[in-house]
Length: 466
Image: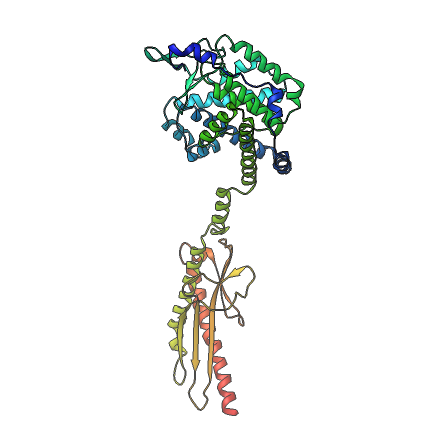
């Protein structure tokens, strides 16, 4: 963007060329110990995981880089939640993108294609060329039709030339309200040729990837070779070198904008290490982001785990555990009702007695793969007594046990663990009580009372004889 016609010659003259590579390398360093530790840990993890999981993790960071590179330039606004939603392709990410305005998705897709282009360029390991950088500009700005130019008569929208060097000065007014000079129009082709020579030189090819990325990025920003889109080109171009080294772009998020610009301004003052350090920090953060994504992707999904847990609460017969317990309580109630119905025939003087329906018994289930009911009534206690001098007393308690994983043909059981139990299939109780079951229960209740009466007699005889 131009700042004002009267100062163009002065601004052209104020241009400070990007440093020779030799000077850059002499004044920058990388914490290689930390870099290697992060990269080795990431590579070890990647080797242990499925290739599809790895591709997904690397896609996430590419999408994060692509969505935020436009936000840094003020083309739209993002926040952490929005970036995460778009990068992860989380639910409703497309609608969230649409909410930013109809112009945002085409910009994002163009930026995403630019990272795909630079990834392809890095994968082929071809020497960088001016043509490749111009093609990168064409990709990243594909969805942008115009750019704003400040002229003597005010701001104007001009068609954006894509893939071509600037034909008008693009010096800017900075955030500090000062003028900043970029390469003059007539100098730009020579500066870009010089940059490409440096990027193809043996010292550059032997340099650490972070120093390569930082140098290429800084030089593009200093030259500002295109009418607009230079920052997006610089960040994508820098990622060519990290793609080669660690298979991922450098993610510079919108929230990094101020420290990002601070480090570039420090480099303008000769402190190249400030920008190299910034780029290293972002690359290490990106590695950690991928690592966390890989670990998260390799753990069971929350949806699958929740579904599996929910399946535990439905038995193989399609019953919920509550339905099984409800069926069991029906069985308990049926038993108690039948005992109460026929007990008057057995509780005749001098025999007294009672029938009680009780809550959950405290014992563990007696049957393998069975459980006690979760709540409610689950036991029937029957008492028979005789008065002195025989003074006998018999008690039986039948409790309910249900299958842990009930099917329709599985039995619910009333047992006292000493005598023959009573069993009833789930499909005799659900959805309705079977008639045959009621007949069987009546016969079982009478047998229990007869047996108890016989035991009472035996005990009373022993007491009198004793």
